[in-house]
Image 1 (cartoon, one colour):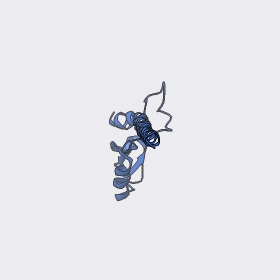
Image 2 (tube, rainbow, N blue to C red):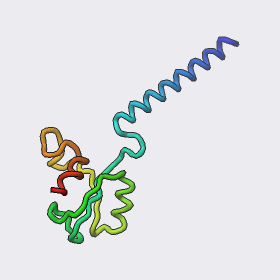
Image 3 (cartoon, rainbow, N blue to C red):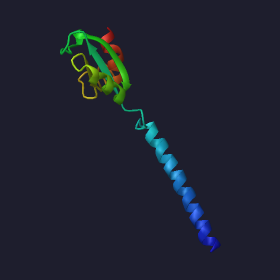
Image 4 (cartoon, rainbow, N blue to C red):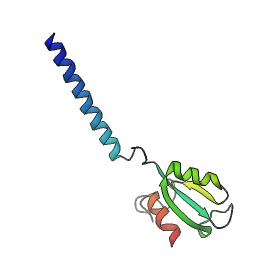
Length: 106
C-alpha cells in the first residue's frame, strides 16, 4: 500500500514538473496570454489605408487593437503584417512589430 501511495505521489510530481516545463516552453515561443499582438493603424483619409495616409500606428494586444478599430472602421484597421512583402529575413523589417513601429513614422 505504501508503495502505491509513493508511486502516485511521484507521478503527480512528475506531471506537475512536465506541465510547468511545457508552459515555460510555450511562453518562450510567444504563445502566452497577451502575446498575440497586432498593429492598430489610423488613417487621416477615411476608408483609405495607403502608407501616405497613415497618421498613427500602435503595436497592441490584438483584442485591444480590434476593440479600438471596431469603434471607427473607416479610420482604423488591424493588421499583424506577418505576410507583408516588407517583413521577413533580409527584408526592410524583421517583424510586423518593427514595421508597425517604424514604417509609418518616417
